[in-house]
Image (cartoon, rainbow, N blue to C red):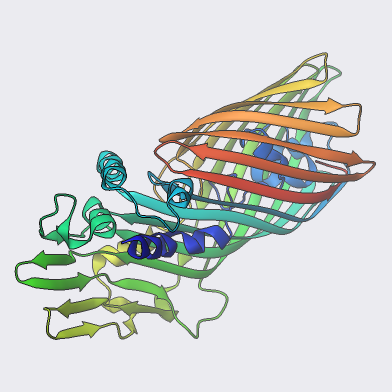
Length: 428
């Protein structure tokens, strides 16, 4: 059973640990600054220069924005499992897992409805600004997997189940989604009101997104029967074809924002993906029925590729849902005499598309600069079904900034860590 459990968990998270996607924004243009991790991704008033396109383009129009800044490259990555964490599994590495522990895990899975796993990261190859104009190119991926309670019980206990008596298991509801894509974003911020004590700016980000690969899989009623013993698998998969090129879908989107800055406080509002035309191209995709039947003595299977249009309507709808939804973001900050800046932010994603971060975020944080050579950050946030704690810092070596960030995520959403590192010039 230990081997079965390890195999099942590995299948759920292996791609997540190494995948590439934005862990800092719900839109496809995530902020390229690793500094955002330190304040638990409440960065909507602090971002300047190259970091502004993914936070709020209006920040490019504020006084004090660097004339030139550059980041090459920045990397962020994350992984998580829920309600069984990797730490839980490591405690029993190479050991027998007590029945009481497996039962407790399964009770938690029953409570939240599934065993969840996945991961995200973001690699920004180039991000820069010149005056009020900024450009960002990033590559992302995201993986999200769910096993229904029956599938989790089968994984933990085998076909005898938690009761010790063989029973039937229905695996309907288990699913797997994954996507890889790149975005090219061009942002502009312009002041509309400037005085000695107050600045107001507006901005917009225009993005072009290219989809490189996608996978959508849904269990359509797989069953493991006890009497007579049989396995009936129905897990169709729709995925990018083996000979497909790098462009498997495309579209354009727009973010807009407004920002207010005074000597003491700043406020900003951004509406992301006010429109977005991205959709996947099914012409080069393949559908595999994922059907297998085994009755104890003989079996049949069908995993042969077919045209995408042969896929079930539910699977095609799941693919269509893998797009980018509107996001509303309100941010604020307050500067103290001590050199500390306090920040707060709330965000809400209006849909169930590619879920690179939670649908809801309410966070606070602080940034403090020490003697002009080091900036330290901390933050916490309540998110959908969980919470996040962040920390990080930047060594300021003249125009060169070396930044690291860490964020821990807990709760029903899944326990996991986000890590980031970046090298930038003239902007943290």
